[in-house]
Image (cartoon, rainbow, N blue to C red; front, side, top):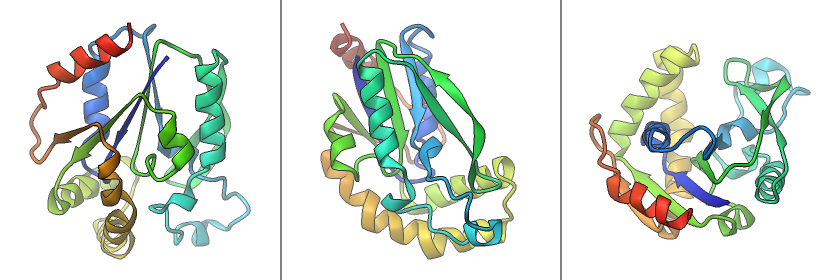
Length: 202
C-alpha cells in the first residue's frame, strides 16, 4: 500500500486537490481518510464548552487511533472510521467501514505534527496558500457547510486558527517531499504528481 500525506493550513485547498487526484484512479485503487474524522470524542463535555475548545492544535486529534487505523489498513485489515459532526463538535455514534486499497491518502492540517504518523508516509505533499486566501476560503466553507456565522468564523480564525497555524502547521512544511502552490481558485496542474503516484504504487 502506498501511503500519501497531504497537509497544509485550513483553507489551503487540500480537499480540492485530493478530489482532483482521485479522478485519476478507480474506486478500487484509492481510499481517502481525513484527519478531521479523528477529532477526540468530547461527549462528556457540554456543547457550550465544546464550542470553546481549540481544535487547531495537535492534542485535539486522537492520533493513537489514527495511527492504529492506518497501520491496520497497511496490514490488509478493515477499519471502522469515526464520523465527526462539526455542528455539534463531537463524534457520531455510527462509523464508516473502510477497506484497504492500493493507495491511501491521509489529508489534514496536523498530520505531520505526530512523529509516528509522519514516519508511515511514502509521499508527503504540502499545499501552500497565503493567510488571506485561506481565511476567505475558511469563512465561505464554515458558513455554508458547518452552519457558522461570519463573526464566529473570523473570531476563531484570528484567535486560534492563525496562531496555531504559525506554531504547529507552517513549521511542518520542512517535512514535505513536494510543495504545491494554491494561491488562486483555479485548477492546479497535477499531472507530474499523478505520474509520480502511479510510479510509486506499481
